[in-house]
Image 1 (cartoon, helix red, strand yellow):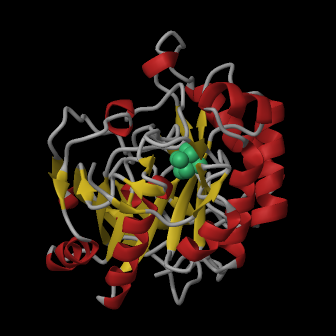
Image 2 (cartoon, rainbow, N blue to C red):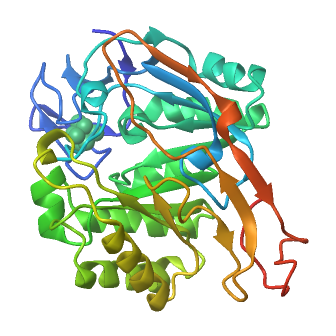
Length: 351
Ligand code: SF4
């Protein structure tokens, strides 16, 4: 078995207890947690995906999606197998449930590759970076030493102490909130909501730039009441300037029997969020709608975006997937010293 000794575990009752994510698996020798990649081997926890890259992709940062962090820049994204949630609608289940494949790379070489390719940052995405913890941490450290920014696309399902260590090396993240209901979390992805919200709050308190994604699944998490409660939490806890993406559901994986989300429900959710006070609401999975940044005071377009539709979907058949298509982004930033040029409203964007 390849990999390296993991961090965040201890021995308890002759088993390895993993302390990385809220599952806190107690693992007999030779077994892995539901993430599939952190294994108990010979009295140690082994991070078996360490140094294995299955996907790499040079992308506009808008594809992550991050709209208020370094708009118009390029980020080199890496992914591997492994995820600590099991979502009914997972678009990358072939990748995250794989247990082999990809090619070997060191954290230093991954960062150097990003720099050599002209990227401004490095991102960990496609699978869950929490389960790739040691590699992400080391590569982020190396990337920063080369002047690159660091990005996570994460489900936020991580314990507070390892999160603190990871977020110290993270500049920006998009957190995928699966629902605003504990029962839905349990039944559709095998996790729980509270630790995810706590991770968001922790990241924010540590100065990490946080944006949020919420996939609107018909009849599962898209009721006006749930969207309203979620939006109120965003405003009250994360702040009204936190960018929020509503993604359009398409039938997939174990939810292939559900219909595509309607545009009406997408607009309804956006209206609910705006009324709750979320100032920057975007759409994902809907071509050319809800992608520009408008000044919340006067509605002028202050960042215009064309192309670079956000998708983290990967067609993985083993081996390695490489995608280098940075030219699809067209981003025009029309800010004057961080303010709307029409009315002077401050627009919170890291340039
Ligand atoms: S990271 Fe994996 S092994 Fe560790 S607690 Fe989470 S699911 Fe279990």
